[in-house]
Length: 144
Image (tube, rainbow, N blue to C red; front, side, top):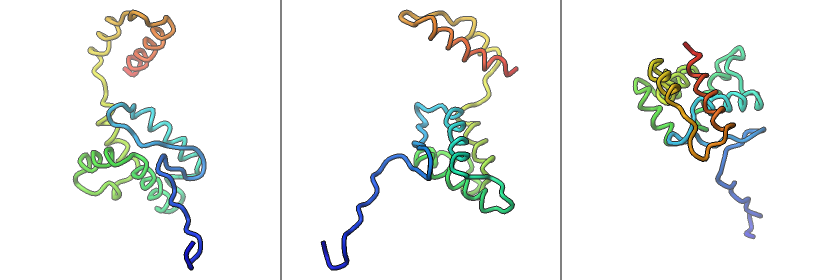
């Protein structure tokens, strides 16, 4: 201990926490953007981060939290997607739309129907897993 008193330890690296819950960085290789976005919206609700609250500060906070939580790789990609300006200068909706267009483009109906019709139960796959896969595929098909 020096004359200035005890030194506080630096916080451990890991998922960021505001007040409630934890959000890890989005993994652009393995991640499901739609699922990440749904979790992010719940994280905002749990921590009282609102987009519109009568002034622009709330919208800025939602953008700032998004840009912080998505991680360096996804932020770098987002900068390329909105190359006309900095991501911090865009609205939350604009940023989410850009990321969604990249990570979850609208599927082609004919191709999705073909995949559904060709889907067979894989060796070692339980009937529950097979049915869950079929249900997931029908969600995409029901969009049209």
